[in-house]
Length: 442
Image (cartoon, rainbow, N blue to C red; front, side, top):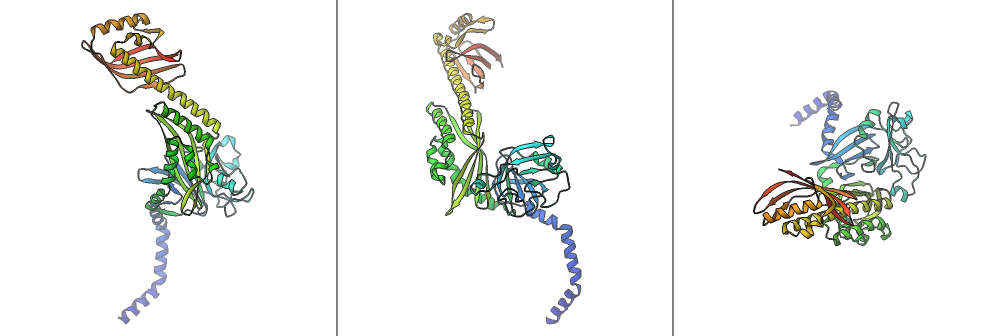
């Protein structure tokens, strides 16, 4: 046995150089493929969850930029390119230090070739550095961009920006939405399994549910329990939203509130939850601003250490948007109520009430209002047991005039038909009234 072992050792020593060279040749030819296959099953630990859009990740150590997108299985990489970051290592601390900041950012502006000097290539995005965390830490500087270049791309060549080849910045621009697409800049990307990433999402479920439920119930005061300080709660913006949600609920309107396009992102000692605030009524939805929550961690518990209204960027603008949404929702509710009463009076034969739903200048089938009402009374004398079924209302709202269309099925003792009814309405003395009526039989 010893003799065989010694023979094997002698053969290995004799051919070691050949074996080593074969090993090196294999990885020079196939190493990238092997790494690529492994990397395809892994994702950056920073991307706990990606909303309906994309997320950009910059790896400073690897001088790489990646774009990821949510899919049916979770998250997938859709773009990868070389990039160049600051000439000096470490995260940006002050103006002129030649460092690229590290953190979670959003593009606030997009510049095209005619707005740029040739140094910045054909396109550029301005990032919101310093962000909330940077401000708290006293970091300074500005004009941190992701941009192209008119020269050859070399590693660690910028003054702090993230630089790409022109062809790559143009591709990247198709993935970036201003104030919405997160851009995570890391010293080094930590690659983890999909399962581990999915488990990380559960850490944030509690804080998301509490935040959403407090707004749905119209009780922003309840948010204080999940904020680092009560004064950090955006009582002006969230208070206005809660006010309208309570108002709609008190009027019996089935208006709902939810967080949409939710992204959960981690960066060393803090995390970010970004989302759109959405109000829905029946089959319509309205965006009521996007928000970024900065999260810190203490004794194993996440808490909100910063609350930034992203778009619109001021509570005055948010209040204006909510007032417009409220006006539209009230039109929907008023029109639905008017159609219900109009149909009820028609079915019951209460023509005194039925007449109040028609404007003085009403016209249909060549008849004016008086002629139309007489025509309907004659039909009602012939047709007994009138039943009218209507489908969902398709409402095109306006402040003074509104159009509503719906499927209608008419049944009585003498006649039945079905078709699409369209009513043109105008606001008169605080009420919606019909001034045109159109029927298309099916």
